[in-house]
Image 1 (tube, rainbow, N blue to C red):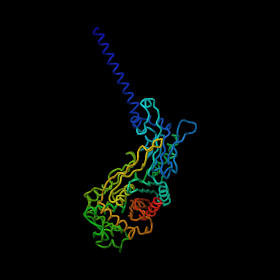
Image 2: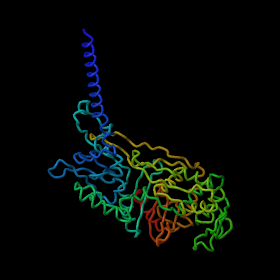
Image 3: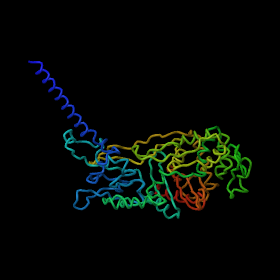
Image 4: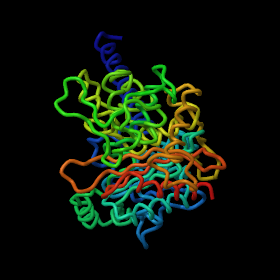
Length: 484
């Protein structure tokens, strides 16, 4: 064989190897990387055939909240929602452009592309054979969710939100938000109509598309005193420790004093020192401003807040449905720490976060990781994934949690929540946060019940005139529905 023949032979071998490598790469990309490429934000083609897929259902308590149905004689499927304004914070929407909430978090399970659903062969992958979508079973209690939404909507509040958790597992039983929206209107196959509806919703100053239960933060008012009280207990105090009170308190370096509410004049908060449990029940601003500013101080309160989940976004589904982060100011300025310790100033929280604070107190000091998906089922009904309760954090010992429960009970027995005596609420905390330059307040109530088996933690926020106790009856209605 001549040198030229050898060179040509080697060239053919190299060319053959390159062709084989190219075929392997194409096969890998088409068979195994298609999902990653489809979801790339730079890939505009990911939305082209999304409506040709019959997505699985989203279910709560055996009731379909979202499902797909054929759009007439076309090859497209239309996404439908039951009682959508009530359940949209949970299901989200599935439009021609995007998806949200569980429709987004469980998108690949619903459309059949989740690897856990794949039963097809290698050849099926190459041929593009579709795997049917699975069913997402949520933790939501249908009755309690409806009760929460109706109570928020009829409260007269401009905006409202409610969250209820099973304190022993972390299961989210209620996640309601008002004003809300109808996912059917934005999930139309008519792109022009969907665009117009999205614009209308986004232009609304009350932002109906925004889930106020976990994706918006508000000043929590005196409900944050639960965190400050926990910091005091962790620092060595007890529910019976005598703490500073008095009609006003000026933090070191502050130009203005912090005062108790006008309704507290002549009451226990006027005394120079009272037991911590009484100050908590009466919600004395001066006590908790002092605790945050001086002793145990800012670092102790911020550490306690972090223990309950503050500063972090909280995931409730597959890492793709996360809350806004709640925050308490980490500062060396006592005036800012004092204001933040009564739930004003730079302190902000989601209703989900304040429900977690309550849940940790009820569950012996252990906060369970909140979750919204109970089971994932394959098209044949088999369980692909089953929720397993996990611990998020342990901010309190069992003994300190028991003392804080006593303090929350005192709120109902003789404090700012005594109008809830006889209701299903065992213990709680009211909170009223001033909103700068507005005629309304953020009215908070956190609590737990029912009396027969106090396992549910509830947080309710409504924006309207008046005090936080106005949100208390809504919390009681939710607990009643969960217990019923």
